[in-house]
Image (cartoon, rainbow, N blue to C red):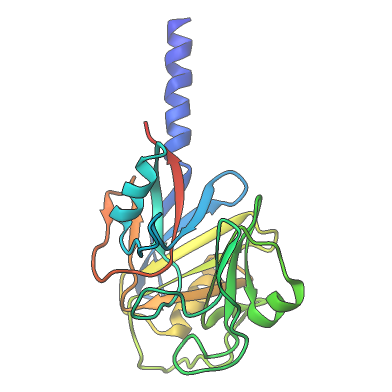
Length: 245
């Protein structure tokens, strides 16, 4: 009986540790870290402000805020572009409360390089949705963050991406499976172009829709991998939450 209980406990903790799976991979000579989240079973959320309305800005601040409710991050990543005051450039919803409306029109910078898109988290699924389709569908997102450009749109690369581009940055983004069950977060460990990054999501991760989060400031947190990137204060942060042991 004791041996059986020990095995069950070990299996429980193994399952907990494997809730978010992160791995290193290489594609076309470029290195990436990819983390897979189960949208139906993992507690996937977005974070921006603390209880006093101040930007959280860092993974450590999110962990500190979660600790009061007996929670902590197991994985996190910056999740969209923001202004100098850390407010989101595009649509943002947290716990069902809209902070910023949808921006459907073209504009300067990567965000305005249409088509862009919205990362939408619902109760049992998560989806990357092109912005105009998002407006038409009006999904009920518990959490949402708009960013841009789209990396992959219905299985095709963004039409403005150039195979011979010389614009290279550390980049991060998210892709989702067609049924919304699998969420693939990726960050490049080498400087990559949009075309190279988009091909990762299309050809390797096989996500029909994928969204660029940001470049240059891109950072990731992986508790199991003992990784917590530091740098400038962030705007929106996406993360998976678990109970404190």
